[in-house]
Image (cartoon, rainbow, N blue to C red; front, side, top):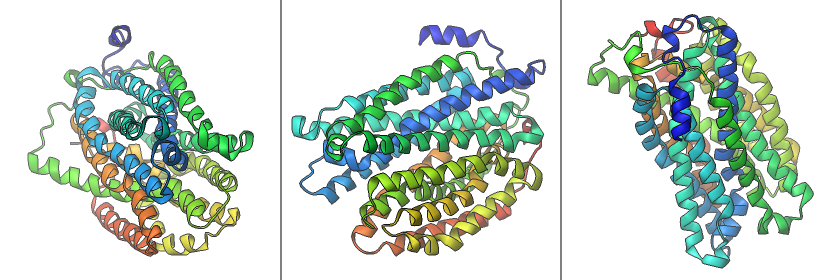
Length: 437
């Protein structure tokens, strides 16, 4: 890490104060950031996709439902450390630069992935396996909280003002591609290995791959330009009162609550529901989910570009209104037939794409540069922990007690609240970020 830090500090310290940096250099930095995001989202999401197998390997499998709920509880606990990571890394990203933090978080994600891959089974070491899994997940959450907030700010800060939505879409193209690769990896495991082999040991392979690929992302990121260092920012003289800071933070928290619960519902919960409660063949479910995610990823840049033309506020409202209206109808069409999962998930993902495609731009345009990573790191991570991290657990628990409709109602209420928040805020689409006061 000392060598990495030395390399980093030789780079330009403030992109906003370095207009001579070429568009090509910024695009290379965007690619490096995006590849890192992709691999980190792969490492983060692979746990959710592998939850059924982790439950069998690292928990007491005499009660399968309890083991799955415990696995999802650890998934949720990983989100608890995200606000801590955002709270710590947010200010550090101002002081030491966005690039330094994004390199550090990649190292932590690699360590956590290797940990999960190498944990002995429950039958070998008992509850120590569950404890080690919890520690690894807490490390992942800590790193992810810092990475997500910092990369959101970084992409928005290096993007051209009039194409900020398009550039911002790279964040969730990376997110979607990482999630897709996580899903594909288990589809491939179910093709090349028997079900018994996947449950016994093969589920560990994607975690090993994720840890190794993280170091490739570190290699790419070492030459990224810097976008902001606190002492040289143009709007460091902005001073918000505590009240304004908290009010804006609360609005961002509610915005993110709607964003994260719809995202995890249509990316993670829907597949678990189809396999566990509708009896869908896992291999067919993974393939159907992969196809839906490919369509989602293809649509994201176009939806991000659309936000540059009609405004981030309008595209965000499309997501919240659409998800509230279709939640019950789409969930109810899912059966044990793979095509039903494909149709429901495709529609759900396209709807959330109107928000996710430009999310990094939308949130960054609400916060001055001085506070951007601090606020994103804490308020966004806190909302993700409370609403995204618990989504799979709540959904699985409610369906296990034949009260699944409560989850759909819960999602709709949160979407309505988020809709009302966004209706009231100013649309800052396309304005220079250093003009946000």
